[in-house]
Amino acid sequence: MIPAMQKRTTTSILKQIKLEIEKVPEAALFSHVSPDGDCLGSMLALGIALEGLGKRVFYYNAGPLPENLNSLPGVARISMSIPEELPKTLIFVDCAEAERVNSIMTREYFQGKKVLNIDHHVSNAYFGSLNWIDPEAAATGEMIYRLIRKLGVSISKDIAINLYTAIITDTGRFSFSNTTAKSFKIAAELVKTGIDLAAINNILFERKTLSQTKLLLKALSNLEFRQGGTIAVMVLSQKDFEETGAEKNLSEGLVNYARNIENVEAAALLKEIGTKEIKVSFRSNSWLDVNRIASQFGGGGHIRASGCSLNLPLEKAKESVILALEEAINIERNN
Ligand code: AMP
Image (cartoon, rainbow, N blue to C red; front, side, top):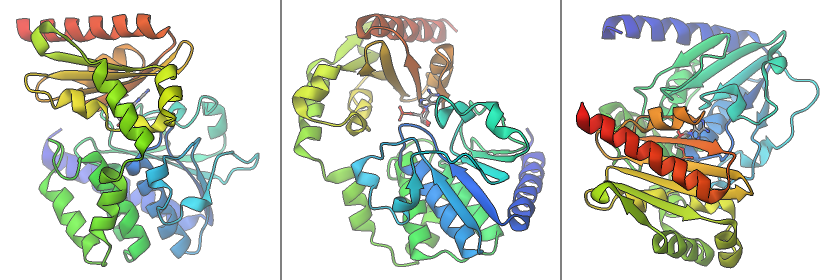
């Protein structure tokens, strides 16, 4: 889309979302499974802003919430069950598909509801009544910042902590290729509220539990390479989680150890959640579109970071993932 046209479309959809929010007394907010700093920070920041406008807010995440996000302001308000009676306005934050909220979140929930879909995933399915999708935004948190300003709510410290968490999560502390001048500009405004940057960074990125460190050791010890070291694959079995005592959500970020190895273009981490239930994280460095690979398996995400779930035994899943990566790399090379 030409930039001027895109700007007009965004302005108009943002205005419609603002009008919708202003006229309702309550809203239900939803964020995705395997929650991360962007989905939770964005949902909480928006919820706190809506509460500031006098609205009743219901927050949902399927959980469990990662330990390092347990101190986000407002986190105690998040429910892990959906009530029978939902408000008329449902707001999905950072969800490429409605089913990313949970497996039973089907379109049935949408009957008689207004669904606002706010997301930055290029793979978004445009499932809402109003869809504000901006793949140029490094984090959904950047979009929520804009919406909160548009609603005329001032950025409190609690909102700032949540949005800063969202942005540093998805930009890898302003280091990934999705980081823009806008990311820094918004972060600067958040920092002005007096939030403790060192503490937020420490909790999110630096402090590791012993079991998490042991899990890293397991992941590194079974690292495998293909295609002359262009592909790196890591596997974490249920046994690895049992032996280290680490929760399943503590593998967040481990795939970057594989991606960061010199000459690696694409990395994958396969995590065995249950028998025949494998969660895959894909990452690439500079030219491979891993969103396309994840989409082949019914997943999605971004060009440089994506994911999917496979209902296969771990070894079979690994074979399929390696095959898909090899094929994608060969196709790119021959183009
Ligand atoms: P992860 O590897 O879980 O950190 O996810 C990387 C990116 O891909 C995030 O933006 C996720 O929201 C997205 N993603 C992960 N799994 C899926 C999936 N099954 N379907 C769609 N998007 C996904």
